[in-house]
Image (cartoon, rainbow over all chains, first blue to last red; front, side, top):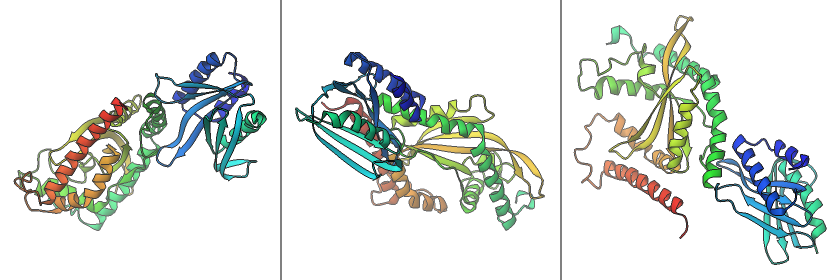
Length: 145
Length: 244
């Protein structure tokens, strides 16, 4: 993982178990992608009962994006799809978020529809919304074709 | 009775409230409970990563104190109505203010609610291991009664500095109880609370054969509890087997 990704994971305030799991998944994605991801994103949502629930880790390169499920170790599931010029439809749904600065109540979800009608859903809460939007602008928007 | 000490007096009630509030504060700020609250999110993560399912349905359990009326009724039941040796002391001796906080374990208590049956054991293990290196001593029991009640009870014994009636302090041993139950059982417990409460208050003997008295409250509550317990097992079976 590059320094940016390490700093990002640091910012999430994860438990040791989750931190280790995300690092393992990032390393596995890197192996499958064949190159160090330029960015990673931990998709999560807030459960009223259980607090923040991490669903999957997304890893981005210029050409590909991979998604790895956080839960149900040791049976990992990693998807990889082309990213370059492959985005057909980008849907953002936000709550309590002005798309500038996220607060504790902010929620953001992004549906990214790809050329073959596959869709990736990335979700964020709180300050993680800032990171998701940043990645959307940096990596999703330029690939809309 | 009890050396002339009128335990129903307002003074006893006031003393009980002050002592229990003090125990609650000391327990909450003590190392053991802090360990529990630190370790619980870690266990949540481990369970989620391992199974893909969420462990608990309440993130941070609050400690609560037992109301005086309930506490007093419990001592009365143990001393009198459930005391088969009456008028001699019950097994373990009279429950009196000197010892009743160790004899009755749930004057300060909380409940951790897990979503699935297999979560109970994990939380109980955590409650045991959180005591390492601390002065608190937990013991646990997995309860399943004929009446359909099931839950794990972890009883944590500790020593507390509590206020005396004379404005001095005293060092007492007391138990704090952490109940670990499932979401299904929690819902049923809430539903049946009124029945259990009435049953506890009643001086009537328990029904002889509730198993055959299908219109009675005892029948309904008992078998609802057993049914729920069985259903929890089926849920686990389904979860572990996964889709075919």
